[in-house]
Image (cartoon, rainbow, N blue to C red; front, side, top):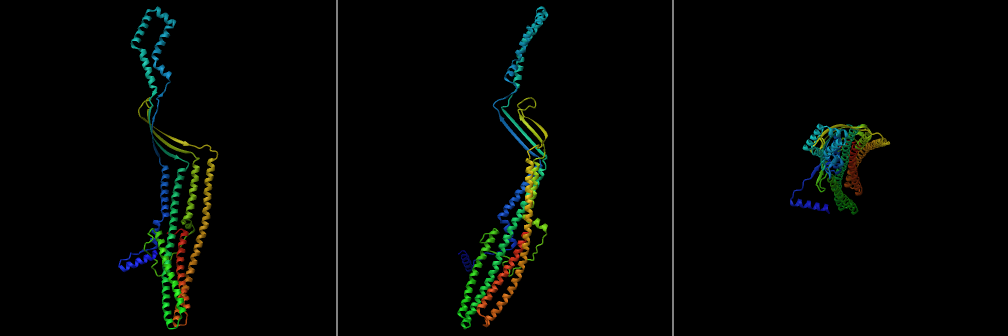
Length: 498
């Protein structure tokens, strides 16, 4: 119904004089380009390449110094006391304790008391010193000094501020950094190889759709010619029937065959429209776009002189699946080295600048003060109960497993390439036979038409000759398309499809 509506709209536009929308003529290269730009799998593969590029840059950053900054604030409920409560009390009363101790020591010493009582000079001197000490308040001064010492042993840490800048530069990491950089480089190359593989799948799909349209379009033209032959024969039989040369049965046979041909004509048109919708979808165009293919308009299908040449080394290098497996082998080998590096010594150069408040630079004080330091850090694994050795053996097993998969895949790919080479030879033979059959069918139809006009050949033989002519031309079209696609498949097999 939709197809009929489109035809009816076209007829109305022609009658009304409305200009018809221009047909978009597309070549195979243009279809390939648009399909690559709009294919979802190719877009995802491109993003994987971009992600692998970021991973590679991240791995390279491990060669460079790492700089980090730290800021800390703490609020504590109590201060820090460097002396106990008894010690603080002793310091606060050290003047009283000192003077009392001196007096007790002097007054309880018999020799001093004897001298003090017998010698007026000593007595006067002692009394004079005591008076001076009382006047100077030595006891109070010493007590004040003790209290100040006690206060200095209490540090205000209720508000603590810490700031630090750290610089770290690896000197030796057991080869881990170098191996990690190689892994990311292989991962990027693997992503690019997978993108190439996705692109080749897209190209094959587009080529199949493109040449399917060309095939259907040529068969539709062939069907149109066949219908015209039948219509012309129907007119001839009608004339011959009127002249009594042909029978009603002859005319009925022709018209039955004509009806069948017209039905095939309708199916071919619908098939061509659906095939074009598929190609539009692959190219990212609206499926109802009016397109015409460049090769669709050619009267003959020319097979490109496209010889596929390759060496065994090029096959292993260009085939995306084989290249991906080879990259996987390299990646697993590097990963085994990373595992081994975890159990080798690691050395790093470190530098720090630290700012604190309170600080202990010049006693304990509530102010900001900074200090820097540099040093070397070394980590040497000693014993892990065989953990490292087992992990390394496991990593090497992955390398061997992937290597075996690569060898198996190489054998299968070589077999596949040989099969496609034989298919090209088969397609050449089939095309040669189809061309010969077409020549014979053309000559057979020509002789049958002459005999029918002269009345020596029945209509059934002419119909059979026309059917053979249609079949021979159709097989010739199929043979040409098969030959073109055989080259496409071989190029994909050897990794040369671009």
